[in-house]
Length: 141
Picture 1 (spheres, rainbow, N blue to C red):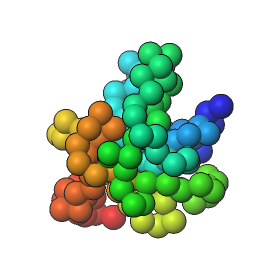
Picture 2 (picture 1 turned 30 degrees about the horizontal axis):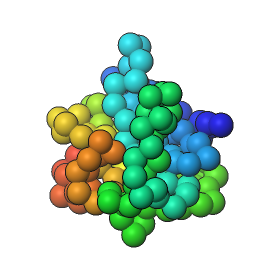
Picture 3 (picture 1 turned 180 degrees about the vertical axis):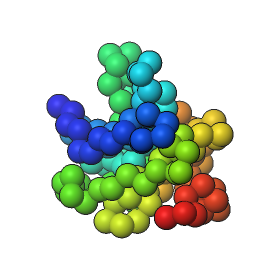
Picture 4 (picture 1 turned 45 degrees about the horizontal axis):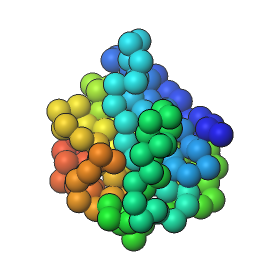
């Protein structure tokens, strides 16, 4: 079962960012009036699988992270909405997830994939964290 932990709308872009948590993972979604535009893997609530479970994707569910792309920081088991914040770039086209005050995932407007500290390498889940891009995009914070 999924639950929305945080949802905010940027006053300039009109885009909405939301953090959604299921029993297996937590994701950031960036939405417009047309629906979900982008997503970012935030972390796993369970130990990653050895192989990708394609039935999850085929049924419309977010996939469970696999070991090949999991960083040592990929699993966080206990969370509540008060542990999260959303950090918007001034334009409202990029947004980062803050967990206990630390940036852990981000969607950046001109980047083809999202970034997460829960990931290593590049995959369908996104890309591993890039601190230089974070600082460039969110330097106002």
